[in-house]
Image (tube, rainbow, N blue to C red):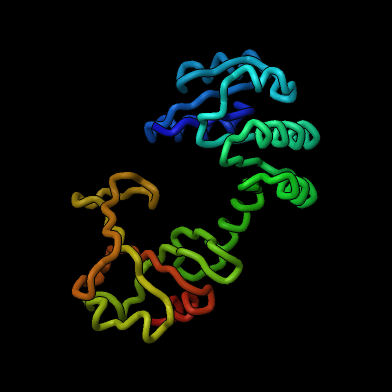
Length: 229
């Protein structure tokens, strides 16, 4: 079982903790707010009140055998950097920190933080691309040029197999999965767990009218695919 230490149990930190627990991970959460800790105790493995910017407090927790630490403490950039440095010195192999600015992110990388994330920026980019791309149901950026996009199939794709469509040859991208609504046809959001997903479809899989294609490739190539009638 993987073990993670989460510092900051506000909305972002709490939801990461909750998801890790749901995926059978052990989670130790810490926050200076008694209310935040009391709330988290009902949902995660362990939650304690403490000041993570105090190195002695961190060293008293026996964190060396943890797989990773997630630092999410709001707008206090100075405390975030200091805590990241202490966690690095303790020896936790993976450190994920929520950054509030590009300069904050640069400093975090300089001291050896393994993952710097910008939740608000990342979500804004994801939503904007989802809105801008034709027929896009969902969007996940990989690099500036590449992404994974869920799209409804063009009419000309319906009833044809992937072998017939020759997606990689014609468009330079790949269909890595197909998503289907519940068998009973009940309307449901694209992220609902009751959707059936087939990962790595074969050349013989046929695109149905209600299917959603999960496509990976360059944005320009996917845009060409989406422009097909």
